[in-house]
Amino acid sequence: MTLSFDPRAKATTLYHGEFRPMFIGGKWVAAQSGQEMQALNPATGEVLATVPRGSAADIDAAVKAARAAFEGPWSKFSPYERQCVLLRIADLFETHWEELSVSDTLDMGLPITRTLANRRRVIGMLRFYAGMATALHGESIDNSIPGEIVSFTRREAVGVVGAIIPWNAPTAASIWKIAPALATGCTIVLKPSEDASLTPLLIARLMQEAGVPDGVVNIVTGTGAEAGARLAEHPDVNKIVFTGSTLTGQAIARAGVTNLKRVSLELGGKSPIIVCRDADIDKAVPVAAMAVFVHSGQICIAGSRLFVAREIHDEFVRRVAEYAGRLRIGHGIDSETEIGPLINARQAGKVEGYIKAGSDEGAQLVTGGSRLTGELYDGGNFIAPTVFGAVSDKMTIAREEIFGPVISAMPFDTLDEAVARANATPYGLAAGIFTTHLGTAHKLARRIKAGSVWVNMYHAIDPAVPFGGMKMSGYGREGGIEHLHEYLETQVGLDPDRLITQCRLKPA
Image (cartoon, rainbow, N blue to C red; front, side, top):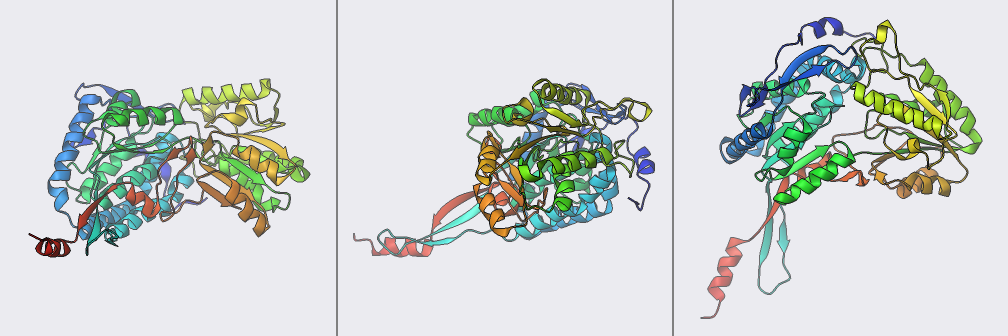
């Protein structure tokens, strides 16, 4: 892919191992403890920068700043004024998109062509939520109780929002949390992953430049155990929103009980892809492959369980393996790279453990399965795209979320069988169906227990469409009008004129 700029040159201007403070109450600050963390390039192991290792004390300071802003200047902003702020942010994102994309690539490894391609989605989210800021309203309700009484509802901001995001999409994940908060009049404390904190700090700078009042957006860097846990349990946080693993999500849900704060969770998945015998194989192969390999499998919606009709199973799996073998693996900052590194050595080791378990349990390794070494890969965390055949539903690689570039392929004989096996998982985040028969598409989509079911495509996430999971993949929705409702409370009132009339007619 030919780019209009040199990402390597821009990368040299971004990070040089220096300290990058966090953002609390409109000020750039170090952790109160003075502790720091290193931000590492997953492709090389080099130190990009250091950031504060925020603790409970820093979270407390950020929540205090968010509360003061919520009850102070921000509460006086009209819906139109909040809309204007979001539109200014969107304009600044347009101007600085190359910088944001390079930062994401350096910090978490996604190839630069992929981070650049997120432009429409991220800026589209900002403009969508800006539009929704002036479209929020309550209802007027006729009552059935005696008397001429009319009730009405109004929607008001829930208050201070605590947001905890993963490392695999810093820009998009930050905006998916911040934009609806601003649109509804909430304030927010964002805790990015300790593995990818740099881009959210760039975003804070753009928020400040756009005129977001002090304390409305706060970014606290730190570990989940120290900063994230305190944010989840904080008694002055009204809502917690989290994207990440199911295990951590369960802990956050328990912590939210302290003050019965609202909680919305977008968690793990083990998403099925069903390839019917009438599927267009030429079109389905690259989509099914990249449903997992697009971010080295480090996506919650990875279509890692590949169910293929027995009649075409062998050909389809062979062609997916051939496609995987042609993918160019390397540093994300290289515009020719299609598959980048895993986030860190710990995750790479975990994925290697799953690959070994697959082989030990009898799955057939069709392609990949190795840790890449050599000059190009020194210091990085690279694993070749991997395809397993002869997988059974009981195998570890077919049951557990791997979060790596591993596909488990399995044949099926009937659609009823495919549906039953696809649903036989505690997760329910996403699914894909490949068929050229419209009736089959509709029937299967209704029966698959997943929050999003795509037909002849994958990874299609639009700002106006709600996204979220079922079962152990979480609850709550992001995107669409449902997302805004997650940040709003409903208050009920009575029509004052009717109420006065009733009082006047009341007998002495």
